[in-house]
Image 1: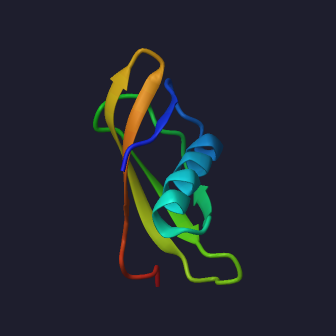
Image 2: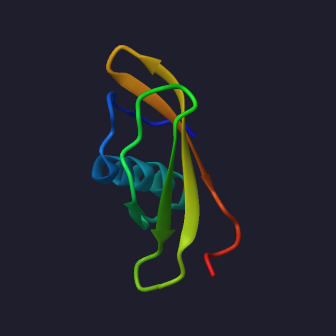
Length: 86
């Protein structure tokens, strides 16, 4: 899944919004997403986030990986683990 966002570095709050947008398009509902750290706009850079559905405390780990950077745009791949966090 790809996302476009301003590069250098992407603040954790904006990253969480971008991940929520991407997951909403994929899932049909908007999960709550929190990310712990900013992610550099460099190919291969990764960030970890947690996604939860509204009204559900079960959290799923999501890894965001920068796949390309062109000018001030960065593309990301988002992978969500199938098993909830323990």
